[in-house]
Image (cartoon, rainbow, N blue to C red; front, side, top):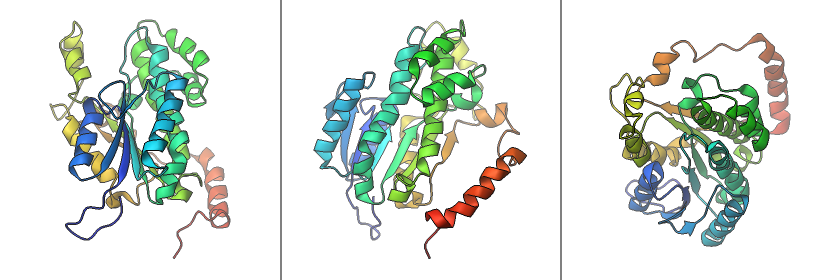
Length: 296
């Protein structure tokens, strides 16, 4: 999106994965209502039909988006994802991690061509509310070593599904924060951020509430005593794609009805650890030389 005079709409072109349902569908509808062109990507009911759980599906999706967009994108919303399901640990990793990182790497040049593109990736508050997630598995997912990561996750007998989900969202959030400040992203004018929802009344959550584990799902603490809705998140994401978010880079915005604050009230913000000081000082020293300072 570009800055417009009050009352004017400057139409942009956006890609939305997971556009057929849930948050992705709500975002796609909101963008179209606002006058923008949306290239939806999903397994069905989308402009581009693609299976993001396979490398060939991801390559085909990137190629199709680049063709439809003419090589220029004003933004992207990566909303495709799989929830926790036993026996689908590998599939969760493929879609939730590579379905984001492979697509964004493939679309980066088109985002850079806009000069002021915004990217929003759907994370999860499970990253900070799920225990027993192996740190090494998260790092392996982050590095693309899915085989070893999934083997390690499956050792969490009885917990492998929620652990796989949380690990996938941790890995992709870390990847986004690292890339967000890189010259190839922020230096090219691309604002990359993550939004981390708590429970949202999507078809997936409704199915869980109606299942045999519905009582367990309802017992999850939400201090505000209600779930989020796809429409609410579409509003948040529209803001994160707008000029109001020009200064938002590398953020992870948690919107979960208070769950994270309830479970970890003193976990954030956290003071800088002493061992982080050398890196901070070196980064500050290098920033002017590398051009990572505001130009005024």
